[in-house]
Length: 114
Length: 115
Image 1: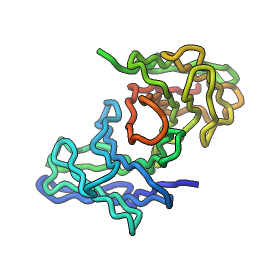
Image 2 (image 1 turned 120 degrees about the horizontal axis):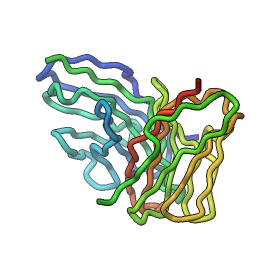
Image 3 (image 1 turned 45 degrees about the vertical axis):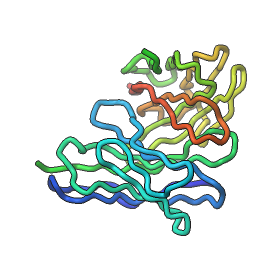
């Protein structure tokens, strides 16, 4: 069965620090990869997604993620975080089959101190 | 504005009661999904539907039921058989299943509390 693992459950950073959130998945076939963000009291929003092509994907708000197929990883990065990045972040994987199901990781809570 | 509407936002249920959570979308999406969100466990798939009058169990379907009589609507019933129903429930939709890499549009969620 497919699974997604996010290594960090709770991350605390100061403003301007660099961020990297780990995401690994277990599925050998073609995958689509996503990062979602949930700001306090708000909907889940799509940060970025990878379908094919350039493995370095740029998203909204200065986030990027790199797909490393050999490592089954899709880590999220941001060079300099802001207090407004405080949120919960979810990695998700969708197989190339026709079910459309997204499998989510456990989530990482990011707290940015001003 | 197109989107997904979940209602109610907060719901309280007595033990032994069934409750139904509403999810409506006006995005003309084929596929709809129900997830349960618990702290530290991420989102877990309850049920999903790729087409009207058809749906499949997700990873944690026990104690839940759904229907998909209309493309726009995918209500979730939390039955008395669900042992631990207190949670945050999220509905989502997507354009089509199958390859294509479409992400989901999420609703704002319903927080269910059993009292």
